Image (cartoon, rainbow, N blue to C red):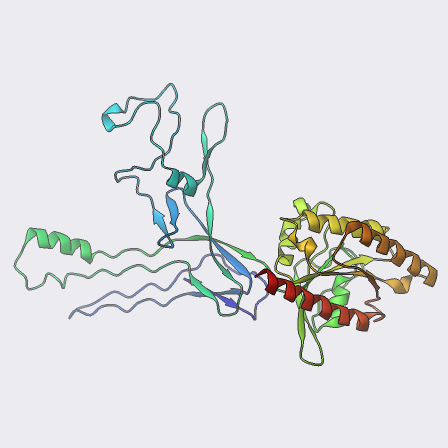
Length: 380
C-alpha cells in the first residue's frame, strides 16, 4: 500500500478506511508461478503527516527505518519491570526472580508502557506512534505496508533423492509469508501562504470569496465554515497567494476548546497570518477584545512561533458603521495592536461585501507573504 500526495485534493474525506493491495495469483503446473498482486495507491492532499501506530509488541528501528516485531516466544533480553504482587509464583527456575523482571531501556522507550498508579497495580498499555513521512509536496509518496512473499511450491524438491534435512528446509521455503498489517494515523495540515484567523461570522469566507475564485458557503450566522478551505489570490504579474480560510475560533482554542487544535494546526505551515475582526460587532462582540483574544490564542498555541510571523490586522464590516464610529474603532484597535507587540503595525479597514479597501489589502497581503517567505529562507 502506497500513499501519494496529490495537489488536486484538499480534504481527507474517504468513503472507507481499510485499504489493501491485490492478492497475488496461485502458481500452477509446469513450474508456473502466479503473478504478483497490484499495489494499492491511496491519494491524499499535500500536507498530510503519516504516522504509524505501533502495537504493544512492535517497536521502531531507527537504523533500519522499519517496524520490528518483538517475539515473545524467543529468548527475551528485553522485558519490562512490573510488580508481581503477593500472588506471584516462583519463576526462579526460568532464570528470573519472583520480584521483578529485567528492563530494557530500548523497548521501554519504544513501547511507552506506563503504570496507571491504581491500587490494583494494573498497567495501561498506550500505543505509541512514529512519524513515517510528511507529504508536503505533490508527488511525494511512501510505502506504508509491504506485500507478502509467495511460496516456492514443491518444484524445488522434484526429481531429487529424498533427504530429510533438505526436505525440511524446502518445506519452510515453500510456505508463503503474509503481507504487512499497519495501523496509520493521517493528519492533514494545509499548505498555504496566508492563514485567516478570526471569530465565527467575522467575514473570513466573504473575504476569500471576494479576492479569489473560491466559493465557500456564506451565511449571516456563526460557524458557517466547518472545514478549512484554500483559495488562490492571483495578481496580474502571475504572483499567487494561497489563502486558507480556517473555521472560526473561540476563546480557549489554544488548549483545545471548540476543536481548536483541529483548526489551528492548519495554520502551522503558513508564512503569514491575517487577523480579522468584526468591527461593527454584529453579534454583540467588542472588536478590540476579540483582537486581544485572537493574539493570545495564537501566542499560546504550540511554542508560540506563529505569533512571531508577519501578519495583518483587518477590521471588516466598516460599511455598517458611521464615519466617526469607524475612526474610533480603528484607533482603539491600533492601541491594542501596540500593546500586544504584534508583528503587524497597522489596522486595515475594509468591507468584504462592498469591496471597500480590498485593493489596498491585496497589496498588503502580497507584501506580508513575501516577508514571510524571506523569514522562512533565513531560518532554514
